[in-house]
Length: 255
Image 1 (cartoon, rainbow, N blue to C red):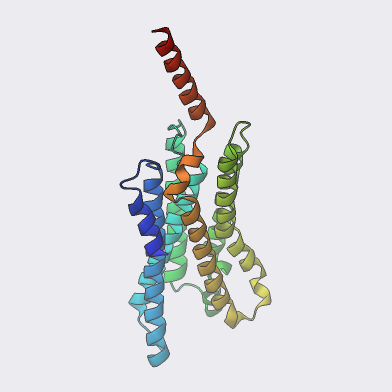
Image 2: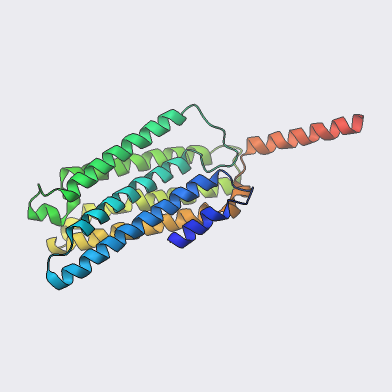
């Protein structure tokens, strides 16, 4: 996933068909890199734990930090894509400051809850088996649902424009599926985790979270590749270019 995302980001350096996708691809590469680093830390901790029964606490804490940063980066990417930042012809709107404030606030809340809930030892042993049963974990789940509602609202607003091309509608539908995979599937698994034996809940949720993140990252890597950019032109820009071309041709004929 890292190689794919980094290659996509580097591929736009010398291309003119998707300049607005470049920062989003770099953010996607950061998501993949942070997830891989966090996974590597967990593998190292788990391997050592299998031999001595203690593991390396520093590796586990570092892995949690990397995973938290990856979650924030992926949520930020979903919000930017849904707001229209992925469109080559999208002009900067007046709500840009509001979007930045919303993203910053969501990032602070997610980081605080994730790091406090996962790295502190204020919960009893049963809570440690299932982080999302604690108050910080529940707040993270609620924030995921709020973020999905905002992403769905913005995506549907852009895709349901009367003159939106088919490629644009399909783009937003696919990114909405990726957002649902990232924001909704995991909270759904947390809701039904109580039917699983307590000693298996953490394993189930960790694997589900990893699978959701990999799936959402892969979908975004496909739809944000530079080859897709020419098909996402907004109708207003296409109409403007057509009118400009016709006006230029008319002036040439008169001269």
